[in-house]
Image (tube, rainbow, N blue to C red; front, side):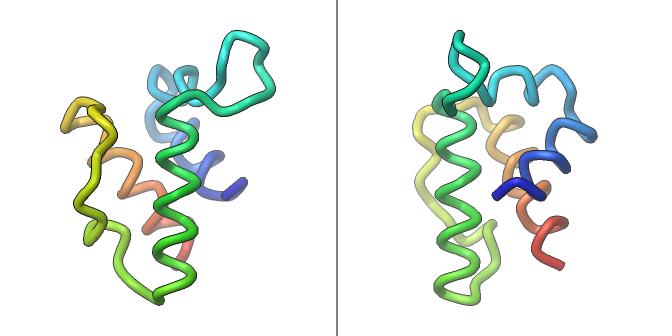
Length: 74
């Protein structure tokens, strides 16, 4: 999860700031979604783009998160 988190913060700095809650320590919705995509892809040896739940995030955010997860898991 940490590697995917770092990938997203590097590729999409604005979205990377949305990963945390206001305390700067715990995950917000996008951070939780990123972690869930990593768990899914790892546990099921699957492509993170196969996750069909988006938690109500904007399409561009979902795509950026899935891309960061895919890159981190290569």
